[in-house]
Image (tube, rainbow, N blue to C red; front, side, top):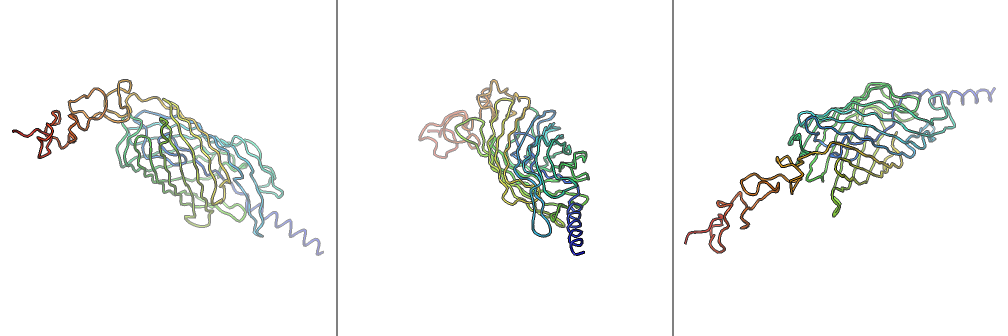
Length: 367
């Protein structure tokens, strides 16, 4: 009788573990930026110029992204390796608004467990994740001119993402329920380099429990840098920290750091990065490797100064149209080279004779 009770208790314990974890989950924590003017997993606030668009494919490998914990303190690995891809398309509207569609796929994953998890012991194969519709609005900062790559300077934007819950729930690629992400984006860019900050909220209708862990409402945050890498042209570094923490109810904290590079040649941009999970909550891998390529129609006037890039000697800096050498496409802050900026120079096109401009107004003093 005692043996029967022990066996019955073990069976009930395993059944409880399976039933507790038998809920749909999407464990993917990484989401690539929609265009090369963002960062790595954080979006920039700017949008493409009106009717301009971007097309991209990003793939990444995740090492040990999912582990289940049991009430007795034990646990086991559920997914050991996962290869994910994300096909994305974005189009700009009116210089401050964009719409995007992402189609993420689990290209391959492998995992075996000794106990039943979601009624199974193997999680190897291909899966379709939930496609995502995204809209972004830049409400502060310059809008993107139709011919521009992106505007420089500070900016603030709001991003809203709605996944369509039609993906595979059996391979942890869909939660099978309504959810959304809302993010506030702040950044500053200058000649391709930049820094950004993200604060966001992930909303789920229902809590999703997995063993002793659970997912519900989450607060999102991130910080990113994109410094230039001299002397190479159009080569930039990528440094990023992203994390989540409980917003309401019981959730799992995560924190990931990534380092990478981005290189652009004409219409093609290539990105490569490596990442590590510092706080490995539910769905956070130990290690991540990212490779992506994007394509966008080449702009013919990146600085929007009215001079085509083919004739523009300074394609990233706009011409200051003031009647002095306005055809070369370069700024001329001191037309007469007398070391007095044109803004303060009363004679901007006539160099003051040395020693005869005591009041430093840019004009030669009368004798």
